[in-house]
Length: 200
Ligand SMILES: O=C(O)CCC(=O)C(=O)O
Ligand SMILES: [Mn+2]
Image 1 (cartoon, rainbow, N blue to C red):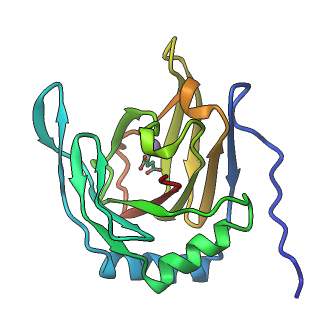
Image 2 (image 1 turned 60 degrees about the vertical axis):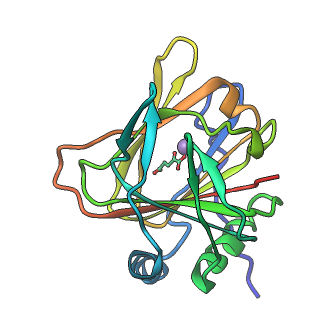
Image 3 (image 1 turned 90 degrees about the vertical axis):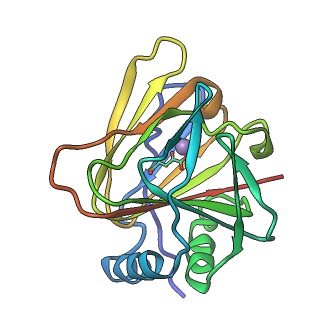
């Protein structure tokens, strides 16, 4: 079988970590199949989060899937964990060809339109270990993803995460850089993002 090669030697970060973008990692056909499966079969919910002690609804729908049915704590809420679907497992197998890591779980995000978003944060929960490896897959509408320095808050990258793209984050990234998915005024369709994680 011919080995498919995905070119990227471009680290989006200048130092202190690694963020690698693989565009068209999934074909248009695969992306359409996975998008429709995920939209219809995932147990999407709108969950509240606590910000400065106040409960507000997250501006997106989420779900948590993984190896075992242990619940997961995230941003002050507990999420029920569901077992992998066949399609989620296929996506996971494909991204595991790039980094040798075995992902144990995935947080899924459904951005219903341009008003749904995710604010600045780091993926640095204790359960992710010292240097988390995060595999982020996007299907559906394109959205801008931004990276900024954790200390001086200067935005250093705004990139487009397109349908079928794969963004791999590893090394010391989560110590030094924050990321967000801002709202957009463009008429934007639905976007599904899966962040595969290793939970110890
Ligand atoms: O939707 C995205 O691309 C980012 C999602 C994210 O940062 C997260 O789930 O932690
Ligand atoms: Mn994140």
